[in-house]
Every structure is written in C-alpha cells, then in structure tokens.
Image (cartoon, rainbow, N blue to C red):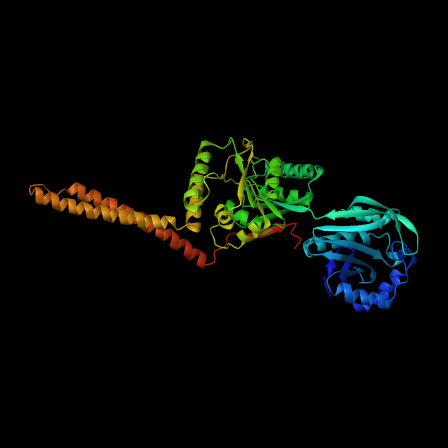
Length: 487
C-alpha cells in the first residue's frame, strides 16, 4: 500500500488497508456523509475492495485513514484521486465518518497534513477539489488549508437526481523561499533586516506571487548579543530558524551551515547589516522564474569603504582569472539560487568552502539584476585585511590549480633567463678577457632566484597543508544549537 504515517497534534494519518473496508462502508453509508457526495448509491464492501485493487494499488489513488492521536481510533478518511504524474496534480477528498469527530478541528488539521504530504512527498504541484456550496463547514476548512475558489459549478446532478451548486477549489504549491543570513556583530541591525524580509514576502503574496518563506539566521560565534536577538526573533516567528556555531568559522562556512538547514525551492543569501536591500528580493526571484539557476545582485553604486571596494575588486579579478568567472558577471554576497544548486554545494565537505567557486563549478546559467546598495547605518564591516587575504586564498587553492601552473611557468622562465645569462657571460668573457666578474650581479641573481623558489615552495606548501587538513576531516562548521528546528 502507498503512503506513510503522518502525525499531527490531534490526528494521525495512516495508510488505508483492506481491514478498513467495513469502516469505509459504514462511513460512506452514513446519511450525513452520503449527502456530501455526488455518488449517493449504497456503498458495498465489494465495491470498496475493487476500488483498492484498481485505484489504490495501481497508484491512481493514495488514501489514508484519519485516527485520533490519543487512542488511534479511526474517525474518517482522506485521499488523493486521479493522480496525474505528468501534470503533477490530483483531486483531494476527505470525509469524517464518526459523528462525534465533527467540530473538533480534525478536518482542518488533516487537510494541512495531507496537502503538505502531497506537495513535499508525492511531488504534486496542484490540488483540486469539489464541494457543495452549502457545506459551509467543509468550505471553511478547505479555505484554512489554503484552497481558493476558482469557479462555481451550477446545477451539478447527483446520482439520486438532486441538483446542487458546487465550488471548484484549487491550491497551487507555494514556492518556499529560504533566506540565509550569516550573522556577526548584528544585534542592532538584524531585527530590521528580518522585518524587511517579512514585509517584502507579504507584499509579493499580495501581488499574486505564490511564495512562502523561511529565514535561517546563522550566528558565527558573534562576541555581542546577536544570538540572544536571534533567539527572540525565533520565539516571535516560527518561520525563523536560529543556528549557533561553536566558534567563528567565517562567512562562507556560516553560509554552508545555513545551506544544510534550508528547505526551500529557492534560496536567497544576504547580509545582516541592512546594506543588501531585502525589499528587492522580488527582482532576484523574478530572474529565477525566467530560467536562471543563480542570480547575483549587482550594485550601480556601492556604499562600502574604499578598502572594502578594493577588496571586492580584487576578489572579482581573482574569480575571473582563477575560477573562470565570465568577465561581464558581477558576483556579490546577495544572490539567489535554485534548490539543485544548493544541494550540489552541500556535497562539498572540505574545510575551506568558497561559495563563489561552488556556484561557478555547478552551473553556467548565472545572471545579474541591478539593485541599490545602502549605506551602513550601524557598526563597521567584520572583514579585516587578514580575513580578505584568507578568503582569496580559499578561492584559488580550493578550486583552481592555476597558481601551481603559474609556479611552473615562472620556474621555467627563471631557468631560461639564467641559462641565457650564463651564455651571455661566457661570450662576454671570451670577447673581453679583462671584464671583471661581478659580485653584486651574482648576489642579485641568487637573492632573486632564492626568493622565487621560496615563494613557489610556500605556494605548494599551502596546497599540501590544505590537503592534509582536509584528509583529517576538519569540519567546515560545528553547530552548538539550533532553534525552531522541526526535525
């Protein structure tokens, strides 16, 4: 039989079995239930078993028995019929057979659980149902579960000849957008960023966009009260998940920690300081809908300090030269990515993550959208010169062998230059035997070649050191605790 047990606060949904035949027959012949169906003929055990063989066991129907959670007493049934795997849609149906089960909220919770199962486990994207317009309790329950009336079917004839109006209701799968925010020294700015995300997503829904959202806040062992703020935000909104890292692992490691927590179809990463405009997330989502796998925000006028702008420029050039980033592509910390890109990035488990490199090796369908960049209202950037240097090293040592090839080229060039200089010295001595041998030029050559050798050995050592650390399974991040983690 298809399906799996689904637990809620009041009910548990278990797969229907042949042993439930007598219950289903009793319920379907209950006059209260029968009047809510178009087919009103007497229901039989043989007819139900034939339903199981021809519909349930062939995958055309998935059906559950609704049980009270306290004692597992069966009280009704919920099902998906006419499952179209090509269109990824099905018709939803539910009935409570026990009279004393009505009015307890079982129908509303069952609808929520079943719809969630259909979208997440069955992979459906659209559910439809038909309900008589005068069945106000059922209509209200369906509305609470997110179904909306698409049309009214007039004078639908039932099997006993009665004609009644019906609502045709539809629920489309919402696109879940996961916001990931690495947090460091942001106790004062974070609440405003979170509120802006909430208002933005509500605004998109009012515009007819079928979006839901979650926010993953990753505290990168901030020395201030950032995690206390995260804890308070999580208490106010169940859509917010808090992640507390055990020590400071860096922005990209914090992002990777967030990637392992998201559940969304689309992920958006942004900063915790308010400089990346959360109210323009709709632009990134629109570009994703048009076919891009990853969308980076591009700023016409950046409001960072000269040092940060210089660092960003060097990072851009490094990504272009070392990682093959297209010259016309602008990368930033504000970007959106499809789910499959996130899943691919999560496969990288080495100790030195570099998100830009992970994106560039995953897909070529990357685009830019222009957004504004704000002034930083509070505090200063957490990026020091040392951290920027470390970030650049991560980029080219983790995702490119070009520096090693450059070392080979420089070595060959120096060797060739030394060989040519040696020939030149011999010829010069033969032509003019009185030319004195130069101590200064000899020392300059030794110092130059020695310095180049040490630089190249250091570069090779950097690669070997990172290989050693990776072989020792040094973690990208360590999570101390999470908040609002349902799993």
